[in-house]
Amino acid sequence: MLAKRIIPCLDVKNGRNVRGVRFSADRDAGDPVELAARYDAEGADELVFYDITASADGRAIVMDLVRQVSERVFIPLMVGGGIRTFADVRHILKTGADKVSINSAHVYSPEIIDQSAESFGSQCIVAAIDALRRPTAPGEPPSWELYINGGRKATGIDALEWVEALVDRGAGELVLNSIDADGTRAGYDLELNQAVARIVDVPIVASGGAGNLDHIHEVLTAGEASAALAASIFHFQHYSIPEVKSFLRERGVTVRQ
Amino acid sequence: MIAVIDYGMGNLRSVQKAFEFLGYEAEIVEDPERLSAATHLVLPGDAAFGDAMHNLQTAGWDAAIAEGLAADKPFLGICVGLQLMFEESEEMGKHRGLGILPGKCVRFPPTGRVPQIGWNQIAIKRKVSLLEGVPEGSFFYFVHSYYVVNENKDDCVATTDYGIDYTSVAGSGRVFGVQFHPEKSQVHGLRLLDNFARLR
Image (cartoon, rainbow over all chains, first blue to last red):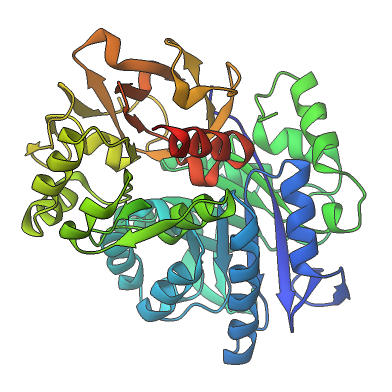
């Protein structure tokens, strides 16, 4: 049976791994290459490198890290942050990434998804969205607004409508980042994951809000996500990956041993 | 030398570096004539079946691969590389494959999430040297929307359950194909590649 995936995310700024709290404050969380090797040894199912500087210099640093990690770690690597053009996508894949996570660019120029999926296959084109809950009246179904530029800019676009369009264009996987939950360690936005999982066929990677083992269990079961992405709970060793996996296994969730 | 066939499709460096990590000489080969110098042939692939087959034929890879197989060189197809070993695929229209093994490729039924992306297990049906030291139920990394239906029952080496049980390792003799990505499947994947490189 297909296993649920546990994916540590390394937010990289100036060559160091940092953790974000609601997309802002940074705290140093170690050397990314060392962390990547540790997560691989512990049984991470995939690794995400996220360039939060997203400048040309930042990109060069992240590419160098990807190269170093991909030489010694034999699990899938996803790279995201600041991707603007088709040439960026090609460059990242050539460097050794297995998947590219595209965020704001799919709003500025949606055809980047079509073009990348057509050239490299949907399997390596991941669309990431940052979503903020809209206020709703009692009894109304929940809805979310799509944000871009690291969660700083509202788009007025309905997130659920947008993810459908992204999948139609060829996105092979979706990363759903809840701005409300990000960095709070108060749990993933279960309703967001569930709502998206029910309208698209591609796998959903839940992101933002993991604070304890129950949160991860919830989003992979009630939240219907295929994978859980987390940053700070792993970097600061609140939990190890084997702890997460045995917790899930004891509750009947299939995970890779 | 292990030849990793470059027909313009997908991330070949990851396959090459896995062999290098294991201590083997692996070369990304762009010219079909270069295959004659290889001891082992690897056909990777991430692309759509039709495009992949078109590229193989245009550059003359189909004939070069047939020659290598006639010379009894070990062969490993990975992902779409496995699918290309069969006679045809229904991915975006009907396309002919290399026809190394009888059978075809069909799409997963829409009951589950398609593509299948992630780690899934294999159930070993036949003992082969390729899987030596790989335990029953080992997890491998899969990314695909189509799967192979082999005509010869004996060509099935291992199956995987994704709503349906399908052949995830196929082969006979020293010719194998795997639906998953061994180069992305940590220790068990590396073990499989090591076993392949040891086939003589």
